[in-house]
Image 1 (spheres, rainbow, N blue to C red):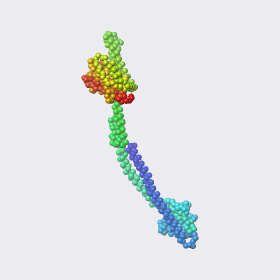
Image 2 (cartoon, helix red, strand yellow):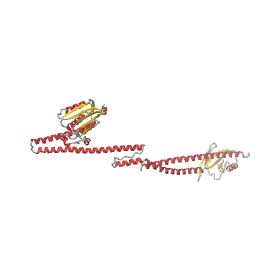
Image 3 (cartoon, rainbow, N blue to C red):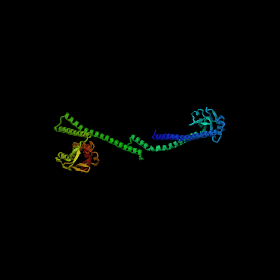
Image 4 (spheres, rainbow, N blue to C red):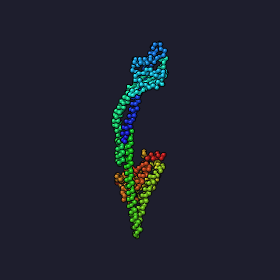
Length: 471
């Protein structure tokens, strides 16, 4: 069942219950008020008739010490037809509850008088066919006699008014519920518009369209729900896109890795088979063995770098405070004695918080790449400076540079701008990928500035936040 129908049905049920109880209470309250008024009037009439009877009994001739039955009957007849008793039905009984006088049409129950006493005046509502009466009874003394006086007052109109009130209220309730149903049908449809929009958006997302967004048209809870749904959809879309990119990158990685293994292994198998199956000249034998050795070292280096990347991602970086001078002096010892390049090192003294081994590996790889890109006699600059956000390391060369479209991909594993040149220098396209992974563990990234023919500058900034976390 639709949510709008549930709202409509629940509203109608609540309104019907509310109108039913309130109507019953209202009509019944009016009925009871009217009935109480009629009972009070009947009791007053009974008192008046009793007083009139006692007065008439006192005015009879003094020759009677005890009121005769005939006189009591005459007084009853007189009261019924006099002004005090006009329109009233009454019954007069003696001590034995034998009827002395009764009006035509009086149909009260006989055992009713058993509860009457001199101190109390009793009554009951008595149904007779389609009519209702209030029967009153009282016990009194008159001229040495104990008498019972009963009256009947027709209150059928009060019950008819109650029945009419219920009938009118039922019709009014039906009309009001019908009108309310129309209004609530419109309101429930209007209130559930955001829900239907969310449902449609969810269906489209389930079918694979993660770009869909629900329209937000309010600022209430439904508006908040719509905005949360859109934020969830955006996060889901980004996650799906990242997963696709990750799967694609993984496929490209496997393809590149397979290619990097297949090419040298094919040649290595061929050279090994040549050495095994035939006798070669010494020079050819040396070239074959040297190729096998060179490619084996390159594959070994590639496997070590892959292992370093995997281990680093799992274990994270164990940062500690280290003077930057240690990094630059280590680079000076490794590359400063080369006769082919001029190494210029300048830095500002500072203390950084980093994993010494990982950061050293990053700087060695960047410097080694700069050396490979620099022609003999060229210059490589290693710099370090304090900045407002942290401490920046820079490795700059003046080699052939990298095209702008290649700069975005050179940190991918096995990606090489010039594959033949990289392999000739024992490269596998993992150095910058390794650097990027290690820098991510330090909360930073590799920044590349390069122009073809002018050289490249690789830099990264160790942020102050890293230092603050360690402190």
